[in-house]
Image (cartoon, rainbow, N blue to C red):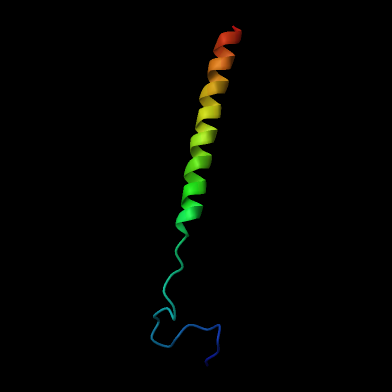
Amino acid sequence: MSGPFLPEEDGQPAEEPVTTPWTFRIVVVLAVLYLGWRLIDGVIWLIGRF
């Protein structure tokens, strides 16, 4: 049985795995840094209230 959506008979993938673009990785890193800073800022704000 063969078709465009079925794997090849030898069990090897038909194409190379898709990698994420470097720009997406930069966006993820910047989002983590921003949210980390907001967490630290929120903790400092909470400590300052008491």
